[in-house]
Image (cartoon, rainbow, N blue to C red; front, side, top):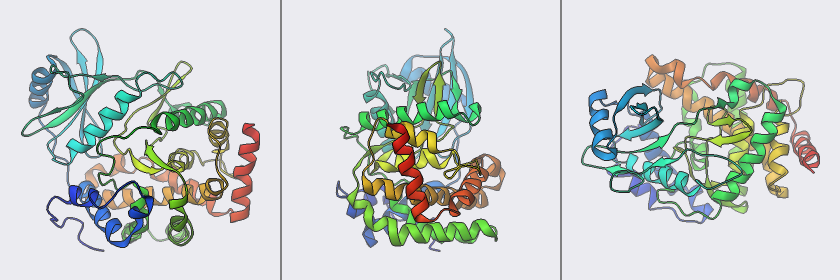
Length: 373
């Protein structure tokens, strides 16, 4: 494997400049390799959290707010909960990394554009004293949003109705994101589908056994069968991480948080990611993800190609999650428990889907679509 910590200059800008709205550009050899190396570099760097006193100074300087600040677990950027003196619950995201500026601009702009949606909910962006969606200064950049007080999807257990409602809300989210053109959409993201064929370089970090073989088979199918067809599906701005930890239920409303991995990619990728997290039931062909897929298809019709590619994409995403998180747990053993919080579910789900023949997989998705009607 190549050294992912190599200094490539302004690798983020360099990689982003190779891309445009033509999906095939994400899979050209030179573009995808540069993109992968830049994205990998971001997740291979150890976190460098600021002091709470520094966070308090930034909060006061840019928002005129004070309160109780508590650091939260986060993959790359620093995230803190803020309880203001008047009782509001807020989330502050900030970073000293230069590449975070594009990320925060993407996140805050996307969330702000979705504020008035009535078919799902997102946090509210708190504007700076100067009226900006984000703040930037010499050492830090960041943004502030409201904290959603509800129940995360993963805390509801296997809940067919919640899964169906999540699928419908995700489809409406994709419809709302569809016309957007958001700054920072080409910034390198390791979870972008353009990186997946390169992730096999991380297989050395997997334990030996059946899971390693399932990952190898899934990624081989992705590279040989799925990736060559992805330029033929519709691409748009996507959330790119609608996991059960990023989906909330507020009474009967479904809410989405954490747009940090959002990007320009195949729309079907959002459905594949959300569904891949719900494959847990060995008594069902798609492991329980059927209800979410049916909910999505009740709002947003899948094309014949999307129907055919959905399960292979689910398997590839599960494999990507396993590969990336085993690698990062190796880099940061002290944070391994947090990094690998979704790995066991992905491994179980991949084992279930690996048993499906291609024709069975497609038939199962078609059955979900029929149910949605």
